[in-house]
Length: 600
Ligand SMILES: [Ca+2]
Image (cartoon, rainbow, N blue to C red; front, top):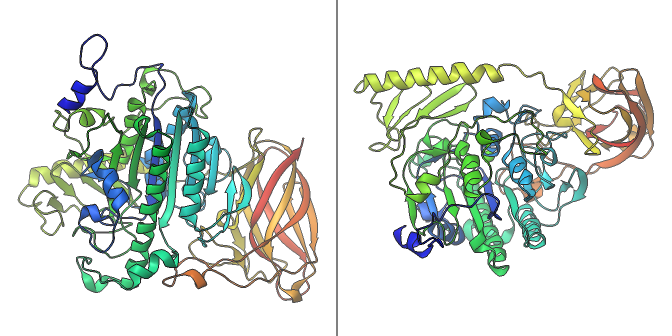
């Protein structure tokens, strides 16, 4: 650090702070790379010899690695904590699907802040913090979004995606496609400050990965195993590791683009994962995986690279968390901090809000800095654990000395009753503050906006009545099937935020023997009958590319049928889809509705 300080001497002759960005000056670009269900242990840097991750290893070594960085046990909470700098219950995030994954609309995101500071902003990949505008990423500070908003996707090879709310077809394997779009964004915005959020959807299931990545691992030994090897499904592990090697290659392509455009030195690159590994596999001997509030469920890599500013090989030991990332990036980029000013111009939020996290810039300046003792909380499903630099109190009140016992094998609560009591009290206080915020959820689905013409209402966000069944209990990429009666219905709880005339498109499948079928869509007093004459009966798909049997829904290539236009008054009412005439034993299968505002 001293050498780095000496290298950057201010005109006054005093040593400049290498991490300072003067207010008003053109700040650094920011590229945030987030992976989905990749664990701390899924990197060769961390002692995993089952795979090779040379580009991520090099990224870590070329800047700062935070050794004890924590995220939430599952996807959507971590994403909200990164985006807001606040614990996910404050943001209203209480789940991972059917609207519970949404961040409250009065939250200010990091993208709001960078956009207000004049940055070009884009998100690419899996969003998972709300679909209908303004929950949509284009309503949360991102000028551009390419990917899918749902918590998981059923097909990784050229699947249906969206670009700024409009349906598009992906091009190739998803992470490759997302990287291509990220590279294109960097290329297009090379001459101006940009904030790019690349949220890869792998190695989340379904376990789909191209042969090129899978075959070398399919034949290799796995020298590193889960701490309880009999729990491990080697086929699942091999697929996950192949997906991680593909991520590594894609991260390398993106970094190469920064080099090619001579942008590396003016770009902060940040890499982390959204939760622990999605299976029993090597994770440094830690207890727990995805979904767990134990160390293995919440410890993630965190690498921050800023060439010329953060010395290579920086290692930071104190505990840190996803809630720290927004304040850190804001300070590194020299943006006005929310405590010091008014809410960002153009932000969707009503007021500025305090962070739960704190800027890590002092640690980047000096890893041995005098740094306060902290308590960092992990929550999922009512279970809460708390971490200090030395201890973890788990959700059952067991205390572990994480420095001597990183695998959480020896409960030392009886040996340290005062520490255990203090941490239990801290957990009780955290629960008392946070859990009431997510005790109930009465947020309707938003439909209509002057800023955004498209609203998708997927089957995921609906409830079905009668004989209709969801294709899978995991709702995120599901559809409705087994619609057998005129008494059945599908209902979305909608708040029309902008009255107007809307074109309604249905994504559907229908057997030959079931046409014609007449559907009725209604919203309050308004209704529309639409006749479907064309059958569309594609096979179930997805299994042909799965390396292991999936737990999520299979998919179909649904057709789109325009039901017509409906005038929607403003206000909260259910949108109801019913069948009024059926020919065969079934009506249609429903993937969702797409609404486009076409007039007043
Ligand atoms: Ca995840």
